[in-house]
Amino acid sequence: AQKITQTQPGMFVQEKEAVTLDCTYDTSDPSYGLFWYKQPSSGEMIFLIYQGSYDQQNATEGRYSLNFQKARKSANLVISASQLGDSAMYFCAMRGISGGGADGLTFGKGTHLIIQP
Amino acid sequence: NAGVTQTPKFQVLKTGQSMTLQCAQDMNHNSMYWYRQDPGMGLRLIYYSASEGTTDKGEVPNGYNVSRLNKREFSLRLESAAPSQTSVYFCASRSQLGIGVWGHQPQHFGDGTRLSIL
Image 1 (cartoon, helix red, strand yellow):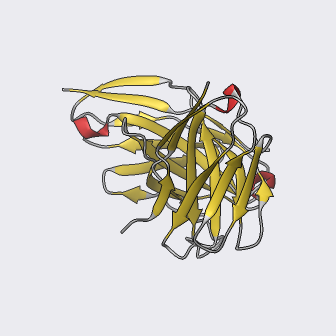
Image 2 (cartoon, rainbow over the protein chains, first blue to last red; image 1 turned 30 degrees about the vertical axis):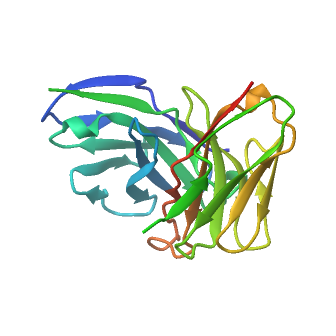
């Protein structure tokens, strides 16, 4: 079975500061993918960034980067120069090569990020 | 550029009523999924369909049925709604063409259906 743990239920950050959202995972799959999604108050799920377990470099996508530490089973999302529009729920998710028994994503409970002016 | 379209966006049902949530994608994706999101929790997989004509159970399938009508459409049916099924339901799709060697590809989500069962 796969499990995602996000230990920060909520965070308050000043605008323009960098933010790190924590994510640890547990899986027995030899190959897996890690994903971060953003859910604004309007409710839609927006894909942000992906990291493959065998990728040699940490993923980056604009202001988003993923601090992937495989030995520690962590995949923290870093948002540089935060903006008011970054206020949202953020979900870490993973998919194993076996899908954990089902071909879907396993999600954490999320972190509610609030950017303050 | 519609992506994944879910209907309806909101619905209120009485206990015991039935209804079908509709989902359609225009990205030519093979795989489609239904999730539910409850307060304070992440999304949980209800059912998925790897291709037209196939469906499989996810983590929380009890009380639901699905139909993969064709490549574009994947519906979720509640035969006898219960208050415990009050939730936000998301449909998603994914391409079979993956990123990197192992074929992982992000899922693209619809805007969700807010379902309340009284």
